[in-house]
Each structure stands twice: as C-alpha cells, then as structure tokens.
Length: 105
Image (cartoon, rainbow, N blue to C red; front, side, top):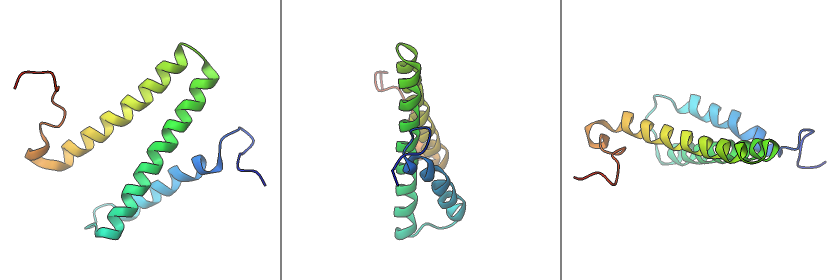
C-alpha cells in the first residue's frame, strides 16, 4: 500500500481537513482546557499545511507564472483569515493587529 492516492496527493493531505473540521465542531463554543487547546492548535496547523500543500500541487500543475500567483494568493488568504479571526475574538486589545507596520504611530 502506498502513501499516495490515484491523483498523486498524499493520504494525510486528504484526511487532515475533515479531521480538523471535526475538532472545530467538537470544540466550538466550549471553554478550552490545555489538552483541547493543544488539539485545536495542532488541527489548525495541520489544516494550514494541507491547504498550502494543495495550493502547491495546483501551482505545479498550472505552471509559471500563474502557479506562483496561486500559491501566493493561498498563503495570503490564510494569513488574512488568521489575523481577522484573532481580531474578531480578541476584543479591543486586538484591534491593532492588522495595522501596517510601516505607518507612523
């Protein structure tokens, strides 16, 4: 048994997103203890790695120059989503997370 499926994607990259969704559903709206927090962080990290891997596979299939744009767009969307999520859940203390670091203070 090999580690890849018919389309050339590793099995882990297909299994991680649904597992991360299950972790999200089970932890939604609950007070996160240390163990659950570690599990949620591991699920988020694995889902991000799987998403970047899928974008990289698509980028290789498309080729230059559009493959580079696809990969850059995927990473930017993930980064913006993480920042917006932190800002939405952080209250007033997190309002300045998305501030441009080059802007005068």
